[in-house]
Length: 328
Image (cartoon, rainbow, N blue to C red; front, side):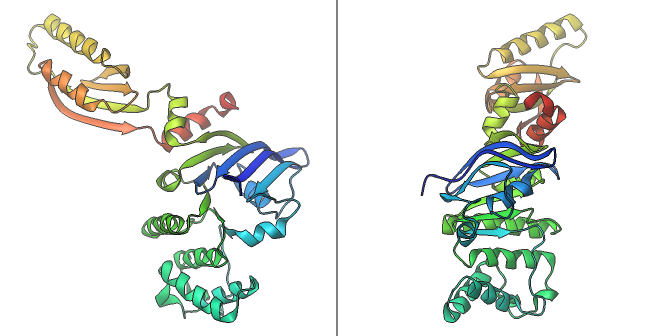
């Protein structure tokens, strides 16, 4: 198998004159957790369905695990696990019975199906609910059972489409941690589709930003922030006190402030400095908080607080979707 487990080339899906997916080029490496990020209607689910061979593209090429999804959809389904947004089970069967049924559909023997089903229920934290009817499961329990269901055939790749929708915050955290744990244990490749920025940032190695059927950008958080924010990947806010300066002499205060700002500008990696109400907002190429704190204190000014933050998906997402036309 090639290093890239998914390769999409000029992938396009049109309904009439509307391009739901527009000339998409994307590669996902084996072992990655990749996030498809974008608002509802951006083309994420359509892309997933084409990867699975469930709908045909208008044009373009799709390779999943070195298999052409369009020509050999059955072969793709054998080795890819898919958890849709709203997973369904037979409500009158127990969780265990549902898993065994899926295993038998994948030509796993009765004895092995029972063993694998019980092992997976334990791994997803559902042992105590194994004999409960699936119709009595909560949303979070159904998603956990769904994860066990996609793993029962030992897939090379799992695709999760909005898997945490409708789950309470604690359940979301537990579900994401479970995905990471299973990915590490089984060396899986994971594709996660979501419009929830924090969830994607928590577990994904790389993300692709979708809007109106187009992939506007892809990469890890650091590379995307560098591209968007001109290497100003860290923001450090420092609250300063001028009490130690002679405030009766306004010229002296201004001179001392100018000297402080000049020294801060000379720190290698400082990109910009803005001052407002005795708060310095310093854009940096890295975490320069120790050097910044030292210069402020050495200048004679008081340092009341120092906060640092790195640009995350919130800022990246907003920057792209504020003016997506400029990034097409």
